[in-house]
Image (cartoon, rainbow, N blue to C red; front, side, top):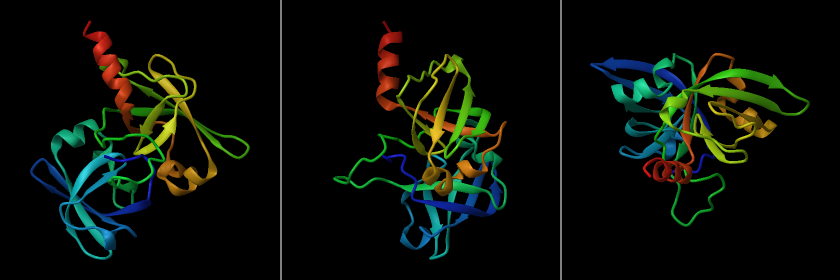
Length: 195
């Protein structure tokens, strides 16, 4: 379980294919605190550490993960948002995030405002996922508040701290992002649709 509060950037230093799997090696300030078998969210995708040393570590994404997330688009030098699993009893500063990406979306608008940034995303509505005004959404692992909720798109406003400390500062129109919709909202939607 995660909170959507990003702890650090990671920079991709190696990508190695093995069958349908992709081994992703990442250089990060968190590396020295990680251990093998630990869960870390990468752009909101929960992956297990399989190798580590004080400067970098490696995780493996299987084909299913690569098909449903934006991890398959990573390149050497790409930056990913990182968050370690939350500690039981610690403050929950974001919202409850599982690290299980529901689908990807495409950035269709990116505006710089006077002191903030405004991004709009479009997603495939056939999945049955919804957003609500002022509800929670996780984009590339970042817990955010929805504005301008529509049938298959929504926007978020980014404060300077979030812009500087996540990979939102590298996001361009047309780029894919990982979405994890609000956990409670998903259960309520499932209950409603099953009636």
